[in-house]
Structure formats: C-alpha cells, structure tokens
Image (cartoon, rainbow, N blue to C red):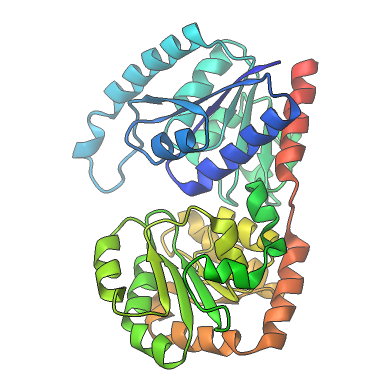
Length: 364
C-alpha cells in the first residue's frame, strides 16, 4: 500500500491523464491512498470528485502574459500556496508525488523535492511548460509522449510512455455504433460528425459550425457538438430548432461520442491527438494557432504525414471546414485509411507503463 499525491489540472488535457494514472494505481492495489491537489476555482475541483477521488484546492495561479497588473499578486499566491502545501503534507505525507501539469503542480512537486520524496512528471505535450522544465531537474523520472524531449529535460530521466487515456476511450471502438448514436437522441442511419474544441471551446470551430447549421441540415448530416464553456448558452439557443444536432458544453461519456462519430473535428492538442489515435477515428484537425511554439501544428502535421488526418489552419476554418467535413464524411474508403493509419500511432497502455515505472522506483 502506498500514499500518493497527484497534483495538477486546469484542463481536461491534464485532468483525464491524471485520472487514468489514479485508476491504474487503484487497480493494482485497492489499498493505495490517493489524494489530488488542484487549483481552487479550476475544472479539477469538479471533475476529480465526480470520478470518486478526494481533492484539496490551493490558492495558486499562473503568470498572466496579457496583464502586468494581474501578476502583482503572484508572489503572494506562491507564498500562500507553499504554506497550504506544507499543511497538506502534514496530514497526508505521501510516498510519492506525481505532477501532470497545471498551476498546482509546481508548488506541490517543489515541496516534495525539498523533502526528498520521489517525484514524477507526466508531460503530455511536445513542447514542455516552464514549470515542468524547472521541476524536471530534480524529478525522479519524466514520462513523455513525444520524441526529442531532451530539449527540455535531462535525457537520463526521460521515459517515453505515451499519454494515458481513460479505459472507456481505449474500448470506444468496441461500442456498437448505432447504439452510441441513439444515446445522443440521433438517427443511427445518418452520417455523424463529432465536434470538440476542448473544455473551454474553440472559437473558430464553433463559429464555423454555427454559420453552417442550415447546411448540415440540408446535407442530412448529424452533429454531436461539444461547445466548451465559452458562449455555450448562445450556441444552444441557436441550435435548439435543429433536430440533427446534439449540443452541450461538455460530453461526459466521450467513449460513446467517439463510437457514434464517423468523423471528428478537433483541436490538435496532445491529449486530443492521443484519444483520436486510441479511439481509431478519422479526424479533421484545426491547430490552436497561439499554442507555445505552435506545437499543435507540429502535432497535426505529424498525423497528416502519416496519412492519418486532415489539417486546416485556424484562419481557414470559416471557408474550408464545411467542404473538408463533407468530402471526408462521404468518402468511406478515405475514412477507413485514416482509421487504419491513426490507430498504428496509439499507445493504449500508457497508464500501465507509467504506473509500473512508479511502483518499481518506490520498491527500490
């Protein structure tokens, strides 16, 4: 039995890998004690308890690059978070600490490293964040999904495991397609597109979908549209007169959504790419243009070069997304090629590889 703290969150791209790791730890030994530490007011404070785990929130925020004024309180938040973490460790002193990215990762892992507790980092992206780079110098091991990560971390600490995804998504391709479509209240006999833009949404994608709602109806195409939080109510209002549409801020059962979809439209973040590979889906990728070092374009280009996806630039979405969707959606042979090629890039057991490494190091 081990006591484990998992720190991080902020987006689904951090939260869901963390849950996959936690679930595998508990599968190995149900006696393990797991405590999550997140940032107050962030997505993890809702999603982690929903998954059945305890979480403690700390007062922490990141550097605001758009406003110097908003950064004036950052040193005080960092100091306060240090004492909050110290108190957490007094009542729950862990054998190991795992960081998955997000605001709370830095103060928690920094404190653990000062105490000599083994720390592990999971970096899902092809371009590492500054906090993880700093923490990596003293981490026990660093789990990555991309090549050439020795640009950011000590080469002798890197282990390429891939990105862990929830087990239900690993098995999404086994779900009956027609039943999955019906679970969203849609017609099992119609072509279906899944549109996802992350937990906050993707403005360009959402705006294009909104513009073409009438076209989708005319073409007899169905949509499962995850809008994200931003402007969700407006999109729902605009879409309520259409019967070929399921629309929501967040999809809880993503395995059913993937199973229902013939084609997926998505950003090209690391975890989105990972899920598409594991779920074996034909995809149209729209990289977020302001990602660090434009790494989402790098991610998307990698799949395009493997003949496993289509890529559209963010500024071209409004003019090209509809034709790209219809061209792919009604080309069954192209869909099959994409599905066959993208699944070759999947690492469905990343959670098992990560947990095995952690447990082996604890034993030593």
